[in-house]
Amino acid sequence: MKILKIISAATSDYDRDSNSSSTDMSRVPVPTGKYITGGILASTVGFGIGHGIQGRYAEKGWIFTAAEAGGLAVALVGASSCKDETDIYGTKTTKCSNGALAAVGLGVMIGFHVWEIVDAWTGARPVDDGPKAFILPNPEAPGIGVAWSF
Image (cartoon, rainbow, N blue to C red):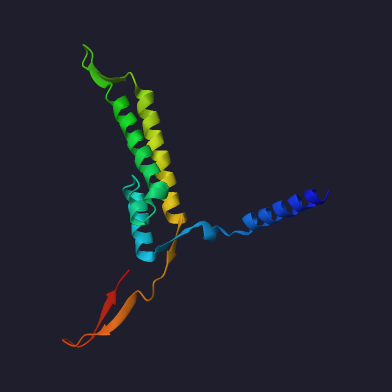
């Protein structure tokens, strides 16, 4: 009976620790500039490039590279079977013997790209390294200048 209480207490401590972890703790800290640049590249280009910029390529970026490249390859194989045919009356029709394959490849590519966009913006946490903008006097001309970095 005593052993059962010890096991029960140990598992309840484990459950409490795993449930109390905040979602912010699971997000990878990334400098703000890399967070923004990686998010923009993941949203526009894809193929894991944004995760590489954020320093998270080994974690998840390779998945997006492989899946999006595979989806593109399957879509191209499916689309390569499409041919334009013209009948004797001059009517053009497009016939695809593997049209479903092209649709599946495109669906895989779009699905993984959407996942990549969401993960690039929510899987990392921007960390401020200090001030980003400075107002500096310009000794060569009257007025001030602005300098920024990230």
